[in-house]
Picture (cartoon, rainbow, N blue to C red):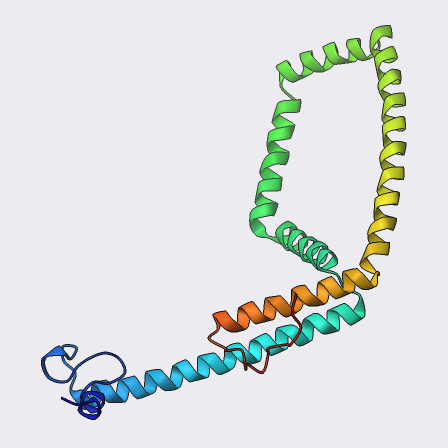
Length: 197
């Protein structure tokens, strides 16, 4: 059997004609299904390429607008939290916790413990400890605030530096190269950039 006979007798699915066909299908049906599968695979590949190009364009637009990945995460988190708070499950849970809180605060054990805590909070030792902790908290808060400002300023400087932008562009290029290859694109892909590390 030469290669031309082999090609005509075996569809690209790997099913040979004759006894190796899937049960209940003729050779013509297998070929028809194989053609449809090839067409669908081609459409999927095209859609992946379009999606990659659209993601790339969106990333460029976001970069030009100054939208960072961190701000996107914060925005998504805020939106997600708002959706959770509006959900019926959250509202039911909140109501249940409120009911439980009312039951606990009206119980004898709670009232006794509350009275004991009030007595402790009026003591001199408690007042001195509270004052010391308050002063320590103010000092710590000031130190963290200063440190946070310095870090934020330094990160802002780094973010706007040419070397960071160059690094960011290289990471984006590498991302699309890797995604392109995982999508079956070769080095001649329309999404391939010539920039290398």
